[in-house]
Length: 96
Image (tube, rainbow, N blue to C red; front, side):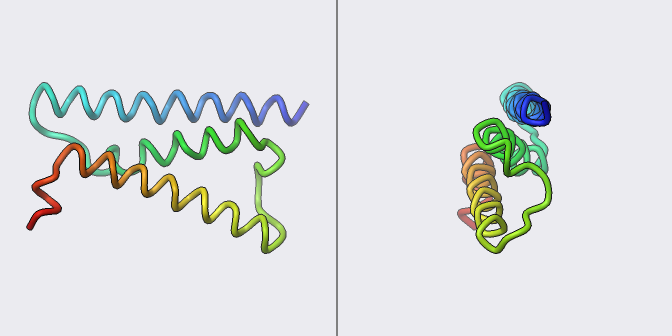
């Protein structure tokens, strides 16, 4: 039963992350402004949800060094996705 709850949470996180990215892009294309936090953390939330959906047993606090490393790698992948999203929204910021 816990596995189902974790997978549902994963789906909710994926939808939330996708919604944040969509809203931010919509705002950017409409007004020319965007939220830096949504640009960076929207994809991170989505990647975390995908991780939880695919591997629900890893939900919760990591106990072993291997689990901590896996969670750290997923976190870095999520931040990289956020950085790419931010770059696509405002490449001039990175060209300073």
